[in-house]
Every structure is written in C-alpha cells, then in structure tokens.
View 1 (spheres, helix red, strand yellow):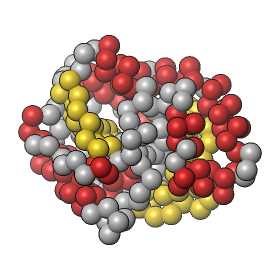
View 2 (view 1 turned 45 degrees about the vertical axis):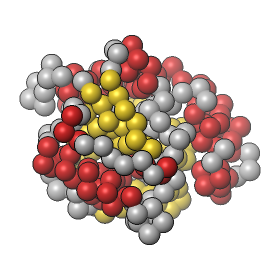
View 3 (view 1 turned 60 degrees about the horizontal axis):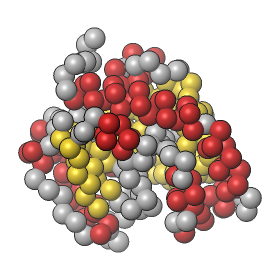
View 4 (view 1 turned 90 degrees about the horizontal axis):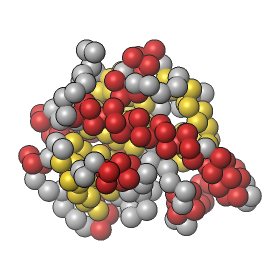
Length: 244
C-alpha cells in the first residue's frame, strides 16, 4: 500500500494515524500544498488521505492551489476510482470537488462532542466494530450542506447533519477528527485562526476545558482511529469489501 497525504498546514498531519503507518511499514508521502509543493503523479499511489486546514473550500483567490487539489480529488475518486479518506477540510473538499456544496455553520462546532453512526454507517466496512455513538474532536466553522451525487451519510450530530459520508464505493470522509494525539489541541490552539474560533465560540477559558476534555478521551480516540485505519487498509488491500 502506497499512500499519498495532502496537507494544508504543518500541524494538521495524520497525527495518531502515523503510528499505525509506522507499525505496518506503509510507504507514505505528504505533500504540503500551502508551502507550494505540487501534487505528484497520482498513478503510483494506492490510497489518498486529505487532511484539515484553516482555509475554506471557496478560498481559491487566497489559495489558488485549491483548484488543483479539487481537480486531483475528482481524478482520484471518479476516474481512477481509488480509495480516499478525507478529514475535516478533506471532508468538505470531497463534497465541493464532486458537485456538493459547503456553507458556514453557525455557531461553529468546537469541542469534544458526540457523533452517531447512521444505520448505513453501522453497516459500512470503514466503521466495522465501532460504537454507534462516539466522542470526537470537532473544530470547524463550515459544513457540507448539500452532499455530492451518489453519497451515503454515515454519521451525524445535532449540530451538523453530515458528519461522515461515503461517495460511491471508494471515498470516505469525516467532518470530525480521528487523528488526535496528546498534543493535538495545544498545537492547533497555537494557530491564530483556530484559537480565535475557539475563543469566539466557547469563551476565554475554552482552551483549558478543551485540553482536559480531549485528555479524558485519548484512549477512545486512539481505539476508534486504529479501527478506522485497519478497516480502511483492509479495503485498500482487498481483504474486505462493501458487500461483506
């Protein structure tokens, strides 16, 4: 399995998922798009992960490389039909690139909050073995308001109807974060745009509370992220399928 990771800011890397990649000796390459790196030739990769970031899907004037990224996602998912996993911005980019729509979420969804698998989510191979209700780290001000064609919603929350989705038979994405590590919240809070959203949404004392809430859930975060990783890898390698 050869993996391409598209990143939009240095601190939003695969996080805890890197440990599982290391254990399995997975060959993976990260392209830092915000630093001017170009998307490599897609043909040699087996899977694509698209991470989060502070920009929005419509910020193409500020970040013109977003157009190339959306084109690469369309090529990957629709033409090459290879496995895709998107997190947060990667969830929104999947929707936008394939004809769906994103818009502001008011108020933003920030904190350690519950998501719930739909009936389709419970039956989906990517979520196999996971609890129906999960605590997850949320930190987003935009949501998918219109899913793309051939989309199945796999998870939801009271604030955001589309927390996870599958598009077709090979692309999955989550609005929430599954890659959380012990230092994730502190690292993200050092980004001005993230810290401002946190304070504006939850108040000046929000960071200590969020650090505490995330620390309490680290074991469940890690358990769910490893299950997701194992299930995704099994799909990529052909040892599981949608019909099982």
